[in-house]
Length: 299
Image 1 (tube, rainbow, N blue to C red):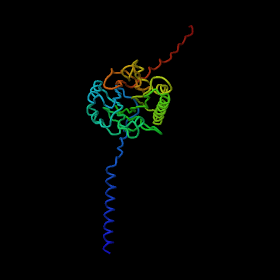
Image 2 (image 1 turned 180 degrees about the vertical axis):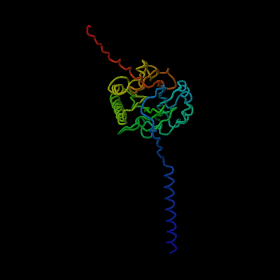
Image 3 (image 1 turned 120 degrees about the horizontal axis):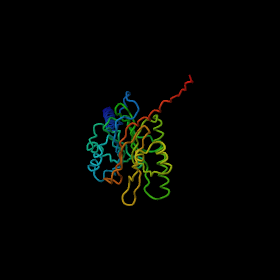
Image 4 (image 1 turned 90 degrees about the vertical axis):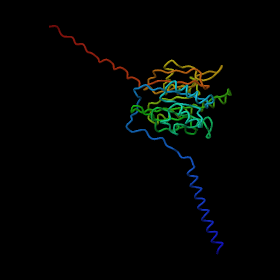
């Protein structure tokens, strides 16, 4: 009888212990922190004021986060879109750029398409202005290749998207073909997701790993507008030594008017910083009203 009593006590203690472990595990488990939804009183559109955007692949911060931040701050941007950001550097970058006020965990997503599900680096958006509905850009059947969010400025809302598409890193013909196909899937996923949202005003920037030619370029330039190209600033954005090419871009919908921008000189990465300044496109002038001429009969 006494032995059964002890067994009962041990069983109760074990059940409490198991329950406690489960509760503690639930407490420690990572929880999804959702980005707040955009306010209903903001309408889709491009603000009249000029906004400045920076995009930069920072090479994992290998050449100094402080120097990278100083390079970016010279531009005085409203929005900063960064690629190859190590997760450990998020808060330091936000603080050094004085853009921590609107920082949110969902403004960053690891580059799963390039480094797998355990990637420690990825794409990060920072802003002087409030951003909502931040999420990984949908990529059916593949890992995250970018992050986008809805920005609100002057009661106008628009989408800001930051991408880092699949890379080609050797001359093997099979690899070249496969990486191009992967970029094609990612670009189509981006275009389809944007259309599913109703094709809102958007600015897309980042490391596309795509030279300005071929089928993938046709998707990019046929769906959106090459903002730096429109400004005549289609310069080299990547490479050191003999290997230099253009693979970083700003793409916009036609309702944006690029008014300024450039590719910065070589800096703290193997990519160059790129930037644009843009605002709402002015409406085309109205056609003059048609006039009619009447001829009076002779008296």
